[in-house]
Image (cartoon, rainbow, N blue to C red; front, side):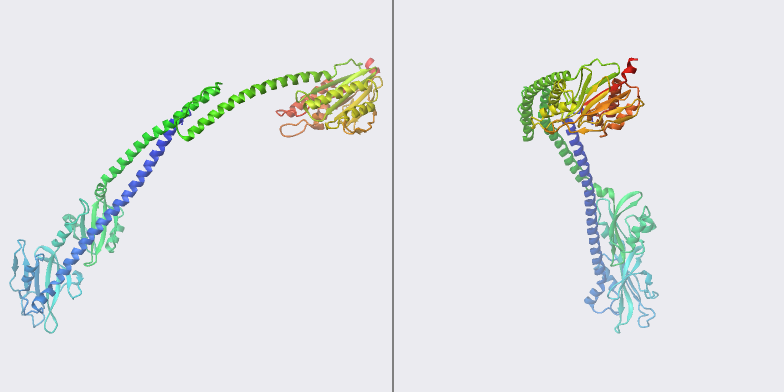
Length: 629
């Protein structure tokens, strides 16, 4: 999202996206729930319809099977002597029946002479009685035609009266010896079953069908399907083979199938009484159409809810964002320096009120901070000015260049890491003696600078009265130890060089060993006779020693800031790198030598920060006779 979009718009967009996504999920959940509800509703209605059909069908079957017993109850035992007019009576008593007949066993001599009796109902409802027919054989049905056997020795078969398809119930007739001598046959028209089934529908265009256990249609509302197809050929689209197997096995259930590329809902259950299968089928669109109003109502309610929620969100966001806009305007004015701008009074929630209070508190603190900053800046500027002055004063303590004989070259350099520091060097001539010193005061900053200034003045004063490095160190040490509470000390190397003979008297008060640079480029250290730093032991007596300069020799003095110069990786410059820099050109003068070492240290430090003062002092001595020549 564009960063320039306002907070209110972003919040509205995010909330609308959340609402739309929530609406889609809710709609999906409702649609799925409605689908299950509709299918469950269709299943329950189909189950009720099937149950009612089965109850009525079972009642009709039981009624027909009970006709012989009713006749027996009315006129006594059925036998061939008294039942010749029984078929007509049965038809008159039961209008739903289409035919009735009595058949005798022609092989039985006792009844072979008795004619068969047959009666049937015509299409106009009249009952017709056929004349006796002696040639009729005993009715012996093929076992494959038997549909059901009843508990009272009767059985049901497929039959026909004239051109009408029927199912017939056959009840044996017994003589006085309880021997079967004939059969009472009662024809029940399939049209009666059809009328029962047609009175039930699943929704508007659903229908019922009945098949036998082999899948042949016994009833179907479409006469063409009834005459030409079976359930296997009719349900042949998609994966209906599995469904037909379940139906023929006598299972109950519900599923969806495709007929003529149209999705249908199917419920199936067995008619155990006759071994048939009952199916209830309906186009799936009709099932959905029955709940379309519910769909529309739910989506209208959700849409209206989403609309009003959207309006409410916009109002809420505006109420929330308006104070934030005022605070943003106020913050910009503060950033522009208008610290006394009046903060508006909020009329909103507790959280926004707290935010306003925080901005008011910020405004007060900014005003106070600006005042303090002005004072601090003034104080800091004064301090910086004083430090710059202190730096100039400290630099005045460093010696100026002096005129030396041509056989002696001297150079020194001090680079401070702060405005003022604690490193020092000093040199001056008294007669034919060159006094020099280099030192490093413990600590940094102003205290070290003051300590350094006092050392320089003492050294200059004492050296003018005592031509001995040991005496100079003893006097400076005693003076610096008078106040033992400052815990400061200085490492120093003091030397007095006879410029005519090249003999140097020196005292090393805890300072790093000087480096001796010979004419051939070899280096070594003047590492003999170390002593303790000045300002540590008040009663300590310092010793002095001598060293005679060989021809074309340079002595390099330095403070520990040189060897301990650190880069960003924490690596020190060290004595080895310093010696490599010295050996890179043995013809260097003291001035060039010092500049070369300082440049090499800068390369070593690179992007790091100088952490200590860098001080170097170099003296080169040549034989006076060669220098004069």
